[in-house]
Amino acid sequence: MQAVIMAGGKGTRLLELTKNEIPKPMTPICGKPILQWQVDRLKENGITDIIMIIGHLGHKIIEYFGDGSAQGLQIRYIEEKNPLGTAGAFFYLREMLTEPEFLLVFGDVLFDIDLQRMYRFHIEKRSSATLFVHPNAHPFDSDLVVTDENDRILHFDSKHNVRDYWYDNCVNAGMYIFDASICNKVAQPVKTDLEKQLLSGMIEQNEAVYAYRSPEYIKDVGTVERIQTAEKELESGYIAARNLKNEQKAIFLDRDGTINRKNGLVSQEDQFVLEECAVEAIRTINKSGYLAIVITNQPVVARGLCEIEDVERIHNKMKTLLGREGVFLDEVCFCPHHPDKGYPEENPKYKIPCHCRKPDIGMIRQCAKRFNIDLSQSWMIGDTTVDIKTGKNAGTHTALVLTGDAGKDGKYDDTPDMICKDLLDAVKRIVGK
Image 1 (cartoon, rainbow, N blue to C red):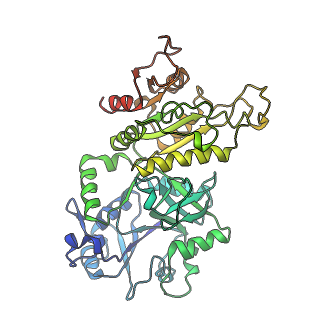
Image 2: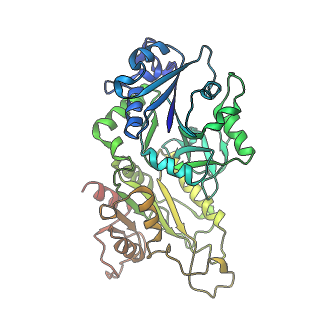
Image 3: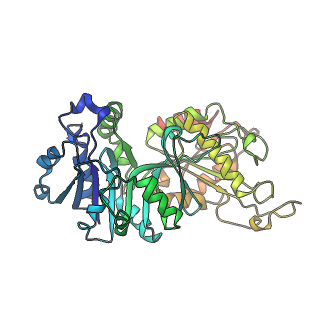
């Protein structure tokens, strides 16, 4: 696969560092230009044929990299005399691409990703365009991606929209895999917007445009503050550890009675209220290097109290409330089934035995495979003995929080490794270990 880097930015917000003497992608992080970090990661993933689209002070990039041969690469350049937006240069790419697909990344993005996983997803979905997406700590001022249950993109939700609704924390990260034929959609070298014109048009034409969700590290480092943060994360090893080539650690979280207050069978969004400690608990997980993954039984669907869409709306409320506080969940999984029949309004479609309903471990297994999780280094936190049994069945450590009824008589079906007063107490003790 070939790679294309959009390296033409001026870096107005980085003048303190660039002093208008170097282009934005040449801004140093830990003594090395952003572009060099990108090239190193591409090479590690076996990508050695790179095309850089340059503009402002582009000669500085050519002087630094040359033809790439000194680094065992082939680097070629497209120089924009006038800015062509995020996709106008695709007109010139047509003559330079020799493979069926290419990777596109913006030049102000720092990343460390298992690109082969993303490529396999692209091929398996038979996708024409695959966007790398992830949750972030500021979804309220980010452009969001709206998908269906199979990760196919339905539309984009601009940060300029008035969002008087709950939304999924699913952010476009600035990395893509495209079928090379996308370049044919740019008939002239004119200013073209990748998302608003090309991708939105493809979605409207029902072309296969998918979102690849991953918790790996990819961040826009287009401000001085973000570069300072990235330098700390590089030096600590946090960035490299998030690459899914490496085994991950996760904290699996029950929902009702752990993240949100017990309120009977929560079937409508107004019944969902976060526990007071939930935000700080999840913030602590986000900073720790553990993945934060919700694993919850939601038999309200099987009982006919609500539909799948209602549960997803409740979860979007959870993600929105957390995002407003600068924290996020890496994944949310729920089981809609319930095996016992006999409820008057039950939905027979979901009244079935399954392997996802806790204490079975189908949801945990699915996440472990998807995110390369070492379950022996992971934890399950919940407020019932079912949660503890689930963790034991999966081979994780377990923590019981005493916000529910579990253990009030001092008896447990499975003895937890830790008994805590609430979610924050549990997380602090786990992360401190």
